[in-house]
Length: 277
Image (cartoon, rainbow, N blue to C red; front, side, top):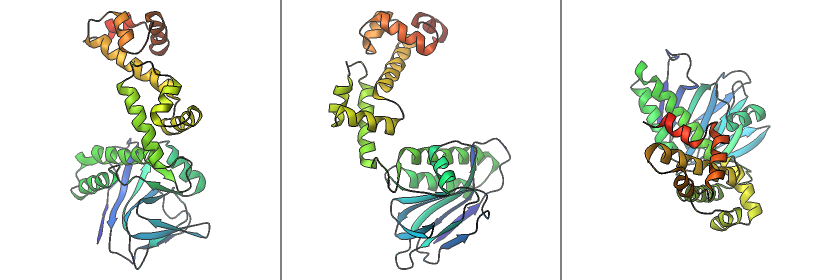
């Protein structure tokens, strides 16, 4: 099966990302590409959902099976294809973007980013949604096409690892589950040690894994969750500041006011007056 669509340049010129060519191949053992340097002036993303194939990088053949993918930057030399015996099922998109994301930067620097991704992250559905939008193309679909592509890229950012990544996906999922519990129960007297025990790691390893997965330290994340809870209570309740501090995880209202003012630039009472509907 070969499904592909070429999209015209968008009528609106300021999307942060936009697909140019979208495809879905399966049972197509002849699929193979070899592009010289400078031939393709767009990013090229492929995700493998079944079967197997390969890419070449610096003369080395890299197997590409289910749950693997690759991203080439603009102008890169490209060589890849399907296994003729077990042809891959691959969804792909060529796209332009002005985004600055770590996976794009990695592709730019290394002339090819090769990774594993979580098959349960919903990426297959997002690709199908993008394909359907392009199949029934109208100019009014442009914002949705851009938004779905952006969702694909950010989902990959959160649910992929280099083929030789330092933090496996299952560990990242464990850290995110821990982060969700901390967010929902931010009023608890969390410490680094109690958060580490919840995740099942030593404090040293938890700190490293959390920073790598969430992009911030556990204590900073906890503080942001508590401030978000406090802002919601300020604008949606009549609770006094002392009660809001306690229900947001701050044991002392004076410390809560200090932290809130440092983060928001104004004290809680003024925030309530300014943002309350």
